[in-house]
Image (cartoon, rainbow, N blue to C red):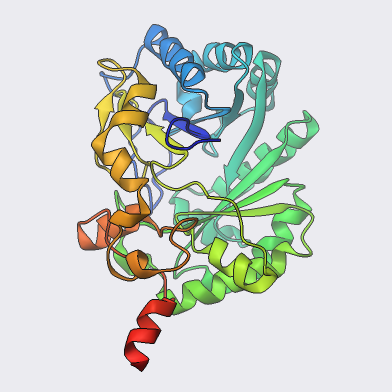
Length: 342
């Protein structure tokens, strides 16, 4: 797939309404729906735009997408257009087995839930709603009972960085097919103090690789593309060009604004005014983020930049420059070492 022309993944924040109040929420979600959300008709048109752009996967997220009563219509439209439709519901009473069954009948392909600790008290403290942990497990079990593939997302922070192996065991016990490990970007409600250090990140990525070799599920990272460097270093296999912010990835807000990712709040356009595929292909911001020669600092000097490139969202959040080096990567490029040795 040519990521200069076609996104592999389109994420749509169907609403910012959510009954949780997670400490790291990039959307700064609130309990009510915004007046300017895309309407049902506009949402269906967006699904058509995602199909026209050629994206094979569309994820409905939020906030909590279950706050939208028209969710099944979007799933049905996407499935009919040949898109794999995935859902990322919040752990609230709205994500019932009956609601998931209706979405499966509409063509839902996968369910993704978030677990940020193997301990109930720690997860609930992170989500700031008592009972969130138990509700998450119920949703996971309901999805499996319905035959829906289950994906589990975990955000790595200073609060849970030591719990990786325990979390991996729980992910396996729940029967997930994929563990998506997020690395905190200090945007929205996320406090920079929750970030781990570059040295801790390197350790976590190496532990993830070791876990991936024996786990009954696949492992991927979000906002830590340097995991691909770890895989290359430890396996000797160089991966294909990977997805990154604006590179195979596009995020559409509840208002129709288009961003390189949900964690990089630089607007490239709006689907009410311009076709998604045109924004993705032609936006100067997206084009710059897809060009590794534009990267600066250690990312610009790195021999792995073509298939890594660092987190553009974290670079912007910390340095105010989406092309700066990723502060959560502790790797020193070979070119830098050569200069220092000389």
